[in-house]
Length: 307
Image 1 (tube, rainbow, N blue to C red):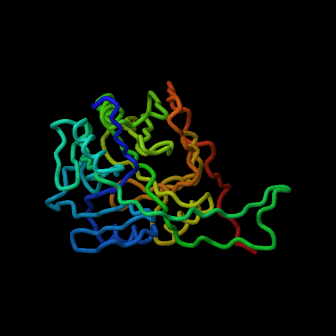
Image 2: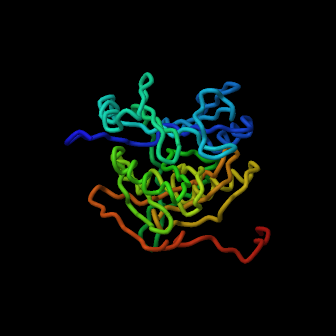
Image 3: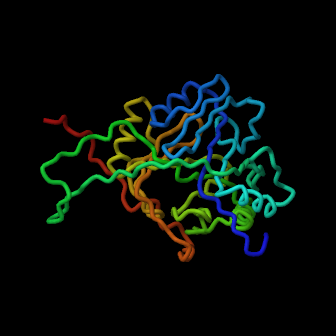
């Protein structure tokens, strides 16, 4: 690595899947509230509000890199960098294992996952803050709240990847070395939460070796707040999709969450209100997993019909 060089990986730029059922995946993306970029028989592209791409190809599409598991799954993860100079510096840091094609840099990580890097094509979106009331702190007076309706993801926040225990050390060395990710929380019996050098999100990438099997776990789509997380899950269920975990709030990361099974492999997590850590944050090392959540929804059974 060049002395003093800064290579800023800002965000996830594109998540590309190889899939069995293109129509089902298109429906899922539309039901998620993503914008349509392009629709073709062998390539369907959608985007978040800030212009991160979700792309589907058939499993046997010739330009797809090899997957790390059989069946529908993540086939390429693209990271957005700040500038073309960053791309050049990253290429030098990665060395001869990286190849350049047009304005993209390509490499395969120690898990066998194809990675690409290109200059981020960012758009702005507006955050939405609902006025709230608590005791004598009144921000909403003489007005009622209304439904958010269908989900509208602002951005793709992180990808969680299942890996083998055997590959864990090499994967960490790769991501925290030339790619300059920082470990925010390292759980010695589970995996490591990694933050890109150009962001303060608690994590942009999670390497989870607990299953000891390579594959996609999930990617996370950020919505406005807890209400929006709940309504996004409700909307997906009403559209026919299956929830994979009850509503809750994570302990690591602190975000509220709701998971839905995806036809392209793994799950999608709707999230809100995640921790932010600046570069002064000291990596927290946990000998054992401290637990999945602060709270998770409990129910005594079917709710009575509303009166």
